[in-house]
Length: 486
Image (cartoon, rainbow, N blue to C red):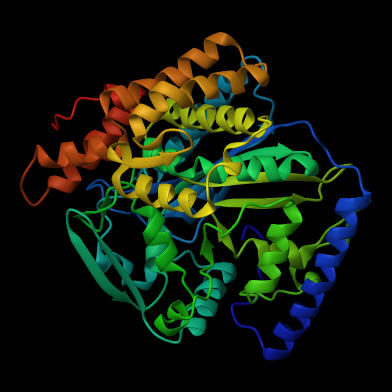
């Protein structure tokens, strides 16, 4: 979805032509996987989506003004109150995690400086609590670009009816929307892990197996449109926000475009093949119109396959990148929220990379002992209940997620990071933050809920967000934050 799009409407002829090109490129990709050499350096990368807020802590739809002062490393998102920053790929060996934190801190400060010039502030949070239904019903919520209007048009035309969002936990929420505005509330971070094609299946399967634990430990989105809902409400809100299915298609078992998946895989090709087999193109933009080359050096550009892959929102998405002397494959881990602090972000990254490395090296891997349905159930439990979730794990049965992390998974993550040659001090610093969260039972979600319980009045949400930003600017990890609100 990062590609520029030339229009926001497509004809049946364009869609028919695109489908044929898509099927052709799937075959090209299959041959390329079997015959070509790929980069296998094991580099990592990070993307982070941010919210812009005004003086009253409400969303400020001024991303174009802010982006005008920044380099191409920063991009728009679908919400006019969102911006995205990108860290370049690098090794995490040695002090790589600390370099990631330094790069993230530097870029966050650049965005904050640009935002201040536009009389706005930056909030790094999974879902901005002060977003309102009224704001999302104003067309000004959307960034004025073809790719976003085109995506909205295609999804709403596929549905043929209003978008219904419904969610319950401590509170209840349901509302019908005219467009996909609620998708913009789901600000996330994406972790990238480049792997050799023959190791991709292990990395992806491991990522799926730990998704529930990741969601639980990293939860930071408990307040959606003012309601206390799932600890990581982004997960169900995102799925419902860009669901192209009517209720009848859901009843028939048609797969959602925001998809956990349905099976363990043996090759990265499995995922691209499923994308083509199960999902119709949403943005059938021709290669020439998009200005994309047929080849990038000796690598096939695969414009049609890559653009289509960008409109199937797997929580662990496969990425084919043709740029460079050799093309490469990577896992894009998409399920974590933004924030709360730079240290928390890198701690989540360290936990993910370490676990995937360790689990992917096992001769009897966890996914050979866990059903895929169990992995999905863990994912939903972690998103719903955060650090208070109970999940299933081989040999342990159903277990408190904090106990699972403290007594088992942290040691696995440490060993995985050692296999990456990460320095001992980095391992202890960043995994120590994860250990602190599970010991204190406090992550971004539990802090927000406790902070909101400590205040009252019509401005309670604004006060919580303001205190969150004060704490965020101080930089100490979230498990150390006091729940008192000024």
